[in-house]
Length: 247
Length: 355
Image (cartoon, rainbow over all chains, first blue to last red; front, side, top):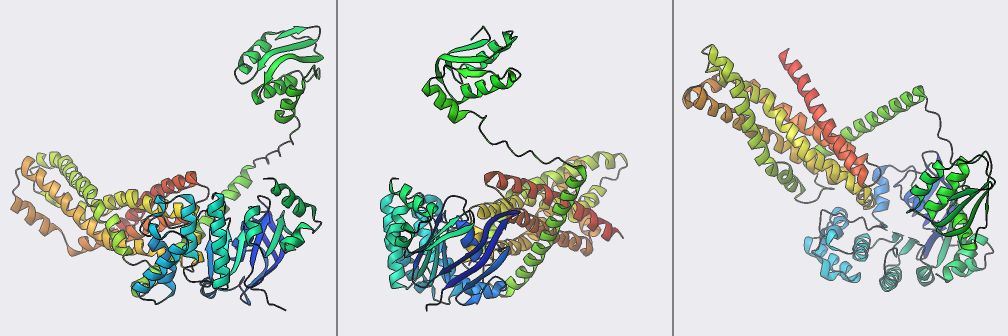
């Protein structure tokens, strides 16, 4: 039996007294694209932020690469983070530095590579996301879609085995969205990457999802493949796919 | 609008353009009893119109009037916009003065604890950062020194010169009466070196750079840049705050030195033009009156002021919640708190060194 790359057990997340995640149990397996979906406010982003300890969970455990991370000290957890890339919903590029410098940050901080090699890697990663021409531009000079692609280049700068994407297709036109999906699939194949995506986009889900996790009101309603989801008999899940078909 | 036979008849458009007039008209009508509100002649209605009907029903609730002759379209609008079918909002908890005081105290204690942790973190990583540049961007200290120090030269220089002029002019009028013109040099030198130079510089730096630090960090927080740094296993304090801490520690004593010299120069200008002093006599007096202790007190104060400005700016930056409004609030609070802290710290220094 395959070991999960991430195992979440009884995860509870709260904002003040409001319970956002209520005993979530999910597993993510290596070299799979898992899509987390569900209605607005169901706790999708909160789930990945709790896994990555951007918010401290109120309860439960998270195991990443076989190590329990919830009680790890900062230095130890940083070692785990070096193997994880994260694409934020709005890119979260550092606005005060150029795209080149943004992508260079993880490479400069976590490797001893010489500057010329770092420059080459940055060039390759930016070309991979079709932003080779924007290497010297600043985030303020980019469109929303370009920012997202630049942020993806930064997220994959260190070729992480695990990549998180928070709504990568949101606000993108269908063509850009499709090419982004294609790129994610390419990364999965070539770098043997495990990808975890939060998204609502049905077209995107159909293109890339190996597994889906459906959240509703802070609980997991379904986890399995897309085909299983459609015949799951869980009303919220089947309705989601039925309604989405006509959008 | 017409009232006849226990029925209120509405007609024409009941929209945001007519609602105010309709309400005024309604208040003029004397209604003794009412059973129906007739909407047969209503041509169109929008959300303001539905709100008006809700309001009418509320005002006439003693009679519980029914809507009649409602067309399908009008009924659809009423179904959509009427507040009557909405769930009752939760009543706000009653404000209890003791609960509020307790909450404010807890909040204050929480903030104080966070500020202490942050200060310890900043001082620790800044010390480590002297020997280990890991976690910082190349050239960031120089870049910050330019922003905090070089870019502030003009405004601090000009204001210090004017401050020296004002101090000298104010004291000259008094000293002249006693023939003690030369003592204007003493007054300016000591006050600029020990008090006014460091304090005025700190206040200007708090306004310029303290606010910039708070707004930069706050903006980075609301745009998830801080989270992005954490996700790259980079300590945000080392990456963002430490270069500023190092830069301000270097720049502040230099700025204070320049401010002090220009302040004394302001005094010299008044001395020469208004008090008939010579450059040599003014200079000799300044050199004679100043001690190394005065200079060291002024410079050491400036370093503490600098640290307070960075720590307060960072604290409000990291503490920000909400969007653009939160950033503005954090910036304002950081400037107010920095200036307050600088003045209190200066008073404490004065007290300590007086004893």
